[in-house]
Image (tube, rainbow, N blue to C red; front, side, top):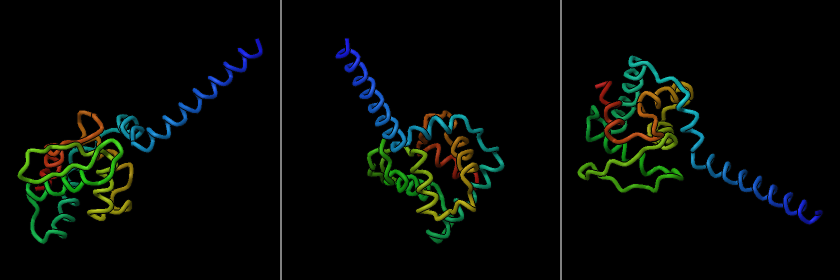
Length: 155
């Protein structure tokens, strides 16, 4: 009887450890982001257009000309190359048909690290609402078409 009780305690400890390890892995992969973001209300269309114009302006500053679809595709591909645990880096060119999936954390890194948009300029709640407006199907990632459609709103 005592051995059986000890065995049950051991199994419950292992199950708790396994659950803790899975939860930590999910946090690293960003799985919590998708669940959290589903509950965020999408940004209104005027705010999305304004944020698109801010991002387009940053892109214009870096490329020296008014950005267009080819520039947006290059920017999207740069985002695909940013690390994300669920997505292997994708080799992307504007001539290829590669669509790819840009995840929330890659999108945030793209805005913060590549375009240098600070949290003061685009706070986390607005960023979350912007993501929800772009990721209308709430799959947890956006395609190149969705990204380019967002960027086109300011053009």
